[in-house]
Length: 317
Image (cartoon, rainbow, N blue to C red):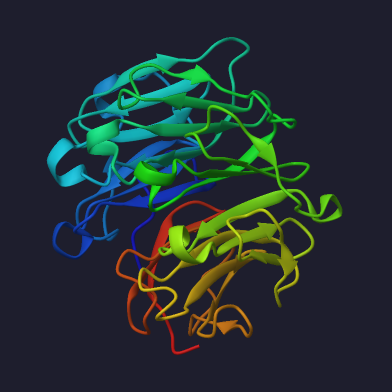
């Protein structure tokens, strides 16, 4: 198991984890938590303060973190912080702070284009101010909420074919919205309002062809779509689905990982059946990362509600 994050707050809730492309070789990953942002270069075994260069007098909570798909080349890291976004282009060694319009928004999620190196596109979800969009790698952000009827946005998912289809899904307190122009205009989907809020989203790697998307809710379990997010059906999992991961080989390998309440479960059949994926109880899990896929024995990083990150291996399920 990993050492706790280097923080002077013993109960530093972990909001999010992000792993670098090439994790199997570099071991680089980040953890956003109540007391700051931490970086590991050994797969989560040890951590250091990623915000040290800011010379802060007090801990700065970060609520989300995302890495460029070209991180080994461009070193871009984005992190949500009170009132704005922190941006680094050297792997988290130095930072610039981008302030968003007052009142200071709470950044609930970050999502980057799969072609971020070329298009510089990313989106930031906020709890009260809708969605902010950037097209220059995170240096400037604008609010784009036309058609977004609910500005309490909890999660985002960008199409793997974003460069062609420009599709983004946004889960909110009241339902689910889709944009097909990179977040400039939104349409409400037929997601059942009684099942909201939507806490988590995951899209098939073949989303452009198969239109498969999954949405986790706060009290009504998992929903699935097969038409690009326009219509949704309940899908064999009940409770609060706080995070969702799909295997990179989906649908050829229809593996899913879900954080149900605070415990991770695995499905090997596209979500029809589920089982615990860990041999022992790690404590209350608040964030997940599976950097090398969902096959049994692959590493799993678990951010804890009580603070710290633990390493585990995915079980047979």
